[in-house]
Length: 154
Image (cartoon, rainbow, N blue to C red; front, side, top):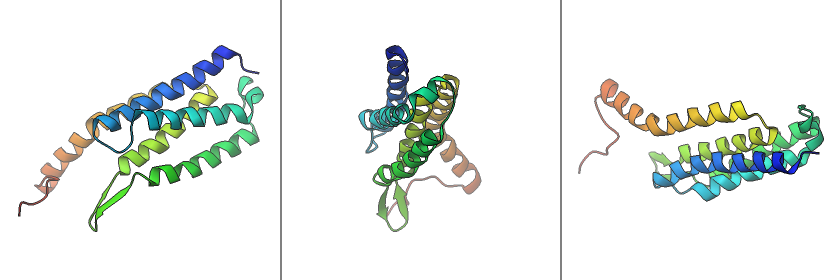
C-alpha cells in the first residue's frame, strides 16, 4: 500500500498541475477555470490510485488500472463537450478549453501513476502552447492569408 506522503504527493501535484492549466483558461475569460480543472486532475489521480495501489507501488500497470484509465479518458469527453459552444453557424468556441479538460485528466492519470518527469515535461509544453500558440496562429494567418481573426466591420 502507498504511504500517506506518496498519496499526498500524487494527488497534490495532480491538483496543482491541472489547476495551473485552469488558471490559464480563467485568465483568458474561458468558461472553465482553476477549480474545475484542478478537480478533474485530482479526481482522475484518485481513481487511478484506487484502481490498484499495490501494482502502482511495484511500478506496474495492472489490467484493472488500464481499464480505469480507458474509462476515464472516454468519460471525460462529456465534461469537455460541455464547454464547447456553437456561437453561430460558422464559429465554434471552447475547443481549447475542452482539450484542456482532457489534458488535465491525463495529467491526473500520470500523477496517479507517479511518473513525475512525464508530468513536468507535458505541463511545460502545454503551458508554452497555451501562452504562445494563439499569438503564433494569428501571426501565421496574417502572413499566409493576409487577414486576421477579426470579423469584418459592418
